[in-house]
Length: 230
Image: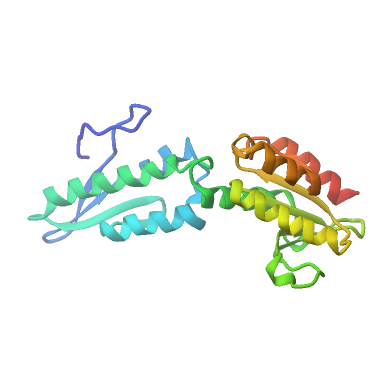
């Protein structure tokens, strides 16, 4: 084990192990400690998909990092070992910092997190993403999530990540109503308080139930299940 003075926010020091792979080749490994630290802040599965996965893969590629199981590792020669050690530490720090990609700051992670919640609550065969409803010019007015319910009336679910998306959804819903499309809707906000009062008023005039943020997961679950079983 290599003793360093680099620490995670909880005070645990970086766990870095060095082993000789063959003559002149050495492997630096974190023995899975970094992912364990991340798991305290984030569902590990979210690292393997969407925006977070893309960021993780870029960090690993830029620093020649690989992983096996839950271990991140870097192979190097003895001559390059000191430089490789600092590069490895830097990479582990950047990987841990993926936990800082919160829903309130990164739109794409909001969409990833919303998708994860929906598919955890509803059977996959009931869900259709980017659904084109039966209205004129349907390809220009897709529904984020079409959910088949027990009744004949489907549920349209939209993720409202920002003010621009709120306005776009208002236009879509107005288009559906114009052609008397039968549906129920739930609008899930990244942060409802960041939407202007006027935009929120317009949206509430044409939309259905609203969830103020993904933190209200229990409220979303209750409303979703009510529609599905109705």
